[in-house]
Image (cartoon, rainbow, N blue to C red; front, side, top):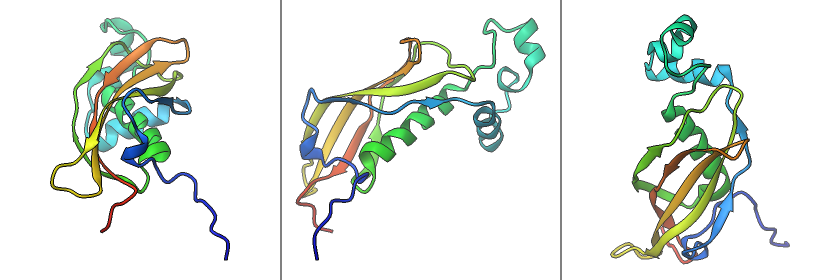
Length: 158
């Protein structure tokens, strides 16, 4: 039987050298995304639940999305594109929110590998850190985060 490659199964750590760059497809943030996210997380802050507050008292005008929602949407895109089947652990990160993301904005992630090395004591696994820039449709950078992940290698044996 012919061996056929399965796509969508992530990128092994050896194929993520320092300097490699890639981006995800875009994702439009919807009203439903905000409502579901704040409801399920308990982030029922007036900034996300009260349009009168936004209009009359908030320095932010418009239907803003929580930064945590923006982060999780982008992690979802990255998981689908690069971590499926190879991601073992999300170890740490720094996160910097540069500006607001609103309902209706289309965002994507631009990644650059800034660290890649074999894991000490974990044969077949590697540590990969990326600088992930979240970009809106107009080119505005709204978030930067630098996750360190434990990633499966080509020679990994369970």
